[in-house]
Length: 397
Image (cartoon, rainbow, N blue to C red; front, side, top):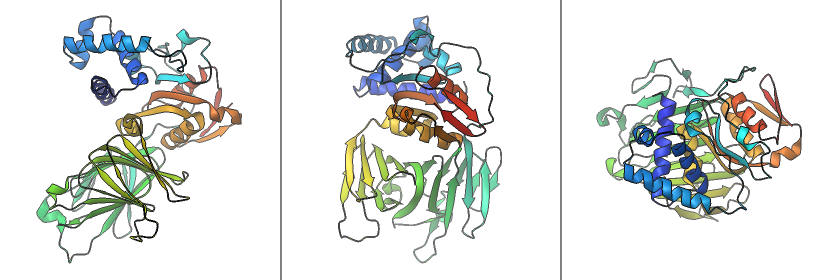
C-alpha cells in the first residue's frame, strides 16, 4: 500500500472512531457510507480496514438511518465511489451551497486519466534551514544533510534528544535555528526535547538547538501554520512549552494543537486537539489590556490582530488539521478562501475574472497529492466555474 493510501486509511479510521463516539459530521458520515458501498462484498470492507463484523454493521445501519433523515434544506452532497477515489478521483464530497448540480451522476465518475497541460508542480517536502551563524542549507526530498546534533533525509529534520548531549546548562548561551518553508512545500522537524512539529507551506519557525534543563522550552512561529505534538513537561523536570506568535503566547505542559498565523490574514487561529493550553494575547509580559484564555479539546481561539480580542469557538478539528495528513478539508468555505489555501500548496497565482465567483460556498475533501488541474476539472464539472491556466496563474471565470 502506498504512503498516501495509508494516510487515507488512517483518516477513515479516525472518522469511524468519531462516528462511534457520536462526534462525526453529516459530511463525514456520508463519506463513510460511500466508502462502505464501494465494496461489492462485505469481506472486502472487513479486510480493507480490519473491522469486526458487528462494528461494520453498526456503522452501516446507523449511517443509513441518519443520512435518510437529513433535512431537505441541507446543501446537496455528491455521492462518490470512494474506492475509486483512492486511485483516481481528485475530490470527495464536494458540493455547492448554491443550487443543485445539473448532471450529478456524471460528476467524478470517470476513470480516464486526465491529460495535464501545465507545468505547475505539486507541493513537496522542502525547507531552508538557517543555522546560528546565518548560513543557509536547502533541505529537499532526496538530499541528506548532517549537523553535530541533527540530521535530515530531505523529508524531515531530527535533532538528537540524548540528554547529556542536548541539554544546555543555565549559564550556556542558547543558539537558534530557523526553518523557512516556501510556497509549494511542507516540512517536519523533531526538536531537541522530542517535540514533533509539522510546518505548512509559507511558514517560518524559530527554535533553540538545545533547551535549558528545567526552564521553559520556548519557540516562535514567525508566520505560517504549524502543528505541535509537544513532549510532556514530566519528561523535562516540569518545564512548560511555549509558542510565541505575533502578540500571542501559548503555554502547554504536553499536548497537540495547531497554530495558523499567515501574514495576509488579520486573525491568528489556535486549535486544540488534545490536552490543554493557556493563551495570552501579550507575549511581551505587559499586563495592560492583557487577555488570558484556556482552551479545551475541540475549541479554537481567534485572535484579531486589529483589536487584540480573543474569541473562542467550537470546531471540528479534523478540518483544521487535515493538511498535516496530506488532505484539504473545507467546511462551507468560500471559493476565494479555498483558492488562497491551494495557491500556497501549488505556488500559484489566482485571478477571479468574474469577482462574484469568489463567494461560491463549497465543502469537501481533496488530496494534496493531486495535480492542480485534476482539482480544477472537478470544480469546473459543477457547472459553476470555468478555469484556464497561463504559466503559474489560474484564471477563474
